[in-house]
Image (cartoon, rainbow, N blue to C red; front, side):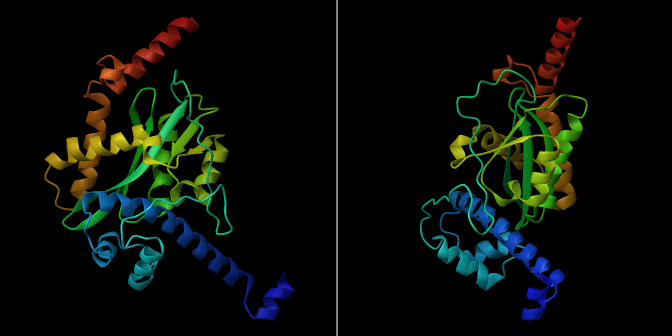
Length: 273
C-alpha cells in the first residue's frame, strides 16, 4: 500500500483523512433525508435554500446541499427510496428485530430517534433513547449539529450509564436508518456492550420513538419560554424529568415510568428472595 500511496503522490494519513471525511458525508447525507422529510411535514412549501440555512449541514455547502436535494427528489414531493442491507458508500441497514417481539421486561428493547426543534430560527437536534417496557427516557442529547458524536453517541452513553448496574445482555437497540446509528463510533459502543442493532424502513415501524418526540416537543417545550440554547437545554432536561417522574401513563396502569420501574425492581427482589 505504501508503494501505491507513493505512486499517486499522497500520504497514507491524507488518504485515511479523506476516507473519514467521505464516510462522515455519507452518514450525514443519509440522516439529512430523514430530517428533510420531517421539515416537509411541517413546512410543505419551504424552499431548499431556506432549508439549507435552517439545517446548516456540516459536510455540505449551499450548492452541494441543493444538488443533493435535487438528486434525492426533494425539489418536488419526495418519494421514499431505501437501499439494501449495505452498499459501497458505507451505508448500513440492520434487520428489523422488533417484528412480532413480545416486550415483557426492562432492557429488552430501547428505541431512539432524532428530531429537531427551532428557537429563533435556529435549528437544534434532539435525540432520545427510551426503554419501551417502562416508557422511560433513559438517555437524551441536544446539539446544533447532526454529528454522531453530538447526537446518538451521547444519548446512548447516557442510557448505558443509567442502566450501569443492570443486565443489558441481548438488548435490542431500534432506530431508523440514519447514518448516526451506524457510524463507526456508535457501532463500537453497541458492540462493546453486546447490544443488537435493529433498524426500520418506515417511521411507523418505530412508533414509540416517534411518539416521544412529539410528546416532548408539543406537550412540554412548546409551552415554555425558550430564547436561546441555554434555555432549551434546561427545558429539555426539565421535560424529560417531568415525563419520567410526574406523568402517569395509561399503558403503565396510571403509573409514571419511574414508579413502574420501582415496582418492577421490588417485585424481582421479592421473587429472588
